[in-house]
Length: 250
Image (cartoon, rainbow, N blue to C red; front, side, top):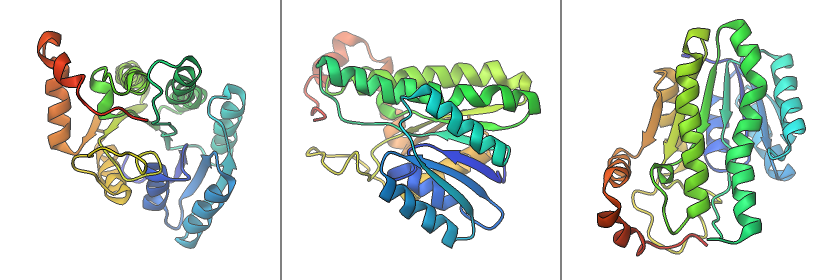
């Protein structure tokens, strides 16, 4: 979709979500933005309005299916959505702790499902619209340093790929976004090297170009994408010893 005019973005209070909100902000564009921190959401809304967009901000926990459905429905009622970006996610990984493992899946997987499902019928009825699901290069394979994070991102990657084929005849476009390391609140405390670390503004431009081309997979940076892809193809007996030595996400 070349020029979406009504856009909803979850996790828009920081990182890639915030950068995408600013990237799309211009006169004539309506933005529905949400995040978990009211002050940061308000700051992003004010910034988008300063660029000429009509922006509405909400504090939302995407693990609440009913509240998320209402948020999507309200945004679509204000201005039929051209583009929905399911971006909200958390990156900390507890290893095998029960409570935090469940929380990561609740946000990264259930949160995406809660965001996307309410818009499927309206977009299918209109036979137009675009859905973007933010996964990660970490979703290409299970990484011992971040088992819950990589698994949750693998799940939404596969779901998005399947939805793309399933909704094609209905006129609804679906893209899966797989970033590498991007400067954000989620990466600021990482104490290990982050190859090809990218600023969120550049990431937002790459994502926008990919969505305008209706790319099924928007993965970047390309060298990291190819490395992740090759790791996913490598036999376990060859790659597992190397992966066990990678740093762990705290």
